[in-house]
Image (cartoon, rainbow, N blue to C red; front, side, top):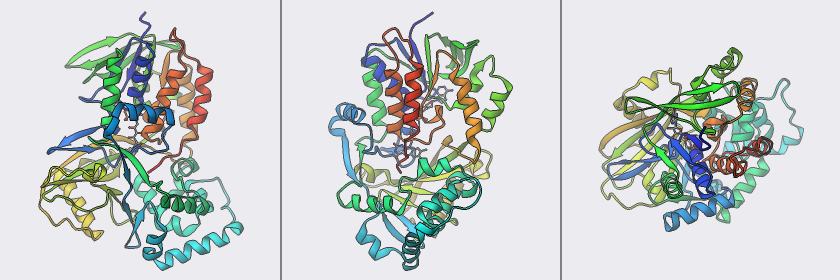
Length: 467
Ligand SMILES: Cc1cc2nc3c(=O)[nH]c(=O)nc-3n(C[C@H](O)[C@H](O)[C@H](O)COP(=O)(O)OP(=O)(O)OC[C@H]3O[C@@H](n4cnc5c(N)ncnc54)[C@H](O)[C@@H]3O)c2cc1C
C-alpha cells in the first residue's frame, strides 16, 4: 500500500494541506480536483480581460498570524491591503459598511436609531422567549428587535431561505460577529482606527490559491485537474483506492491517508460499500443552500466607487452586488467593468433553472428597485452556479450532522475538513487553518493523531464568519 496522502479537492483547504505537507517533506501528495483550475469557491476566472471571483471575497486580517505570514511571502507585493468601502441599504438609505460614526449620524434613519437606542436601554430587562433557542431568539436577545427586524431577519430569509425562527442558534453564534450592542459599538470605533481593511491579491482572490498550488508543486505535490472523485473503496474502518473520472476514463489512486475537502454529503455518496442506512438518512437531512452568481459586463469604466452593496430588503432577491475592479483598484480595462450579483436559492427552485439573460434582467431590475440603475449598455451576462454555497443550519440540523460526523470519525485513514467537509460556514482563512492543523496532526510516518485533531475541532467551533 502507498504511504502517501490523496487530497480530494483543490480549494483553499486542499491547497493549504498540500502546501504544508510538501513543505514538511511529507508525502507523496496527490491532489484530485474536478475543475480545470484550483481555488474552488475562493478561485477566480477571467471575464473580458478582468479577473472575477465567485462573489465578494476578501482575506480578513483575522487570519491566523502564521498563515498570513506565509501568504505574504507567497504573494509579495501582489497582496494589497485595501480599505473596505461598502454600503448597506437600510430603509431606503445607504449606510457605509463598515459602520462609521459620522456616516451613521448623518444617514441612519431616525426611527431606526431611536429603535436601537431604546432596545439597548431596555436590554437588561428583556426576557428570553420561552422555548428552545433559535437564530431569531439569540439575535433578538443580543441586539434587540429593531436591528433584527430591519436587517438581520430579512437578510437571513434571503440567504438561507428559512424564517429566522427555523434556523439553529448556532447560525447566530457563528455568523453574526457583532452579536450585542457593545460589540457593535466596538466595531464602529474600530473602524476609526483603520480596522476596516482587508487583504486582496492584485490578480483576484484566486491568486492565493494559485500561489499555494505553485509552492506545493515546487515541494513535490502532484495535481490532477478535471479529476472528479466518484468512488472510494472501503474495507471496514479503512478506506482504500480512490476512483476518479478523467477524460472519459475511470482511474484510481491508492494512498495511506485520504483527506477530503469535498461536500461531506458527496463524500458519503462516494463510499463503497455505502455507510449504514441511518447515516445516509442523516446525510439526506444535511443540506446546503445554493447560490447563483450573475455577472453583468458593463460598457463603462466604473459602476460606483463602492466595492460592495448589501441588500437586506425582502423585495430585492439578490443579497449583495460587488464590483471586482474596486477590490484591487484596477484601472484596466479602461472601457468596461463587471458587477457580480449574489442570488441565494435552492437547486430545486425556478431561479436555478433561469437562463442567463433572465437572471441578468432580474439583476437589472433589482438594481433599479434599489435606486442604483444600470445606465450603460450591458455588453454581456454570464453566470456561475454554486450548489453547495452555504451549509444550511436549519433548527435541529445538529443531530443529523453529529450522526454523519461521528460515523466518519470512525474511519481510520479518512479525514474530512474544509468548509464543505466540516459543514462549517467558514471563511478562507478558517479553511486554511483547518488544513494547517491537519498537517500538524501528522507525524513523519504519516500517522494521524486523532486526539490532537479532536482538540483542533474544538478550536474550529470558535470560528466566527467575517463578511
Ligand atoms: C458568496 C461567497 C462569498 C464568500 N466570501 C468570502 C470572503 O469574503 N472571505 C473569505 O475568507 N471567504 C469567503 N467565502 C468562503 C470561501 O469561499 C470558503 O471558505 C473557501 O472557498 C473554502 O475552501 P474549501 O477548500 O474548504 O472549499 P471549496 O473552495 O469549496 O473547495 C472544494 C473543492 O473541491 C472540489 N470538488 C468538489 N467535488 C469534487 C469531486 N467529486 N472530485 C474532485 N473535486 C471535487 C471543488 O471543485 C472545489 O475546488 C465566501 C463564500 C461564498 C459562497
